[in-house]
Image (cartoon, rainbow, N blue to C red; front, side, top):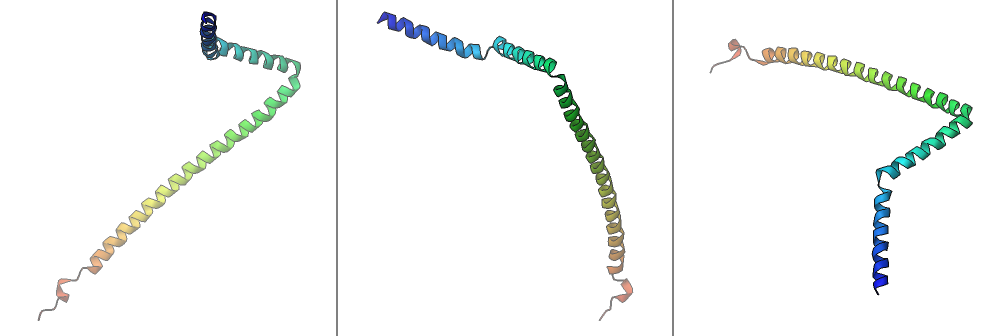
Length: 114
């Protein structure tokens, strides 16, 4: 019975170490280092393939940045035009409301007395 207790205890501690080891910084850093080495070796073996990736995806990135910037400039122009239109409408409403207010007010001579 004692041998079973020892084996279960050691198995639990080994499981706990595996769980902690899988989340440890060094294990994670080693995996990143290994992946970097694989990519580096592949890039040295096939430079034209990686060069074409850089050209194609770099071109897509430049095109995307150009279109994004153009979109933002267009949005800015639209906001400025909307604000100018809003100010014109407010000015027109204020002039029309002031002119209608004076025309709607009855003059004192039109009031008839009985």
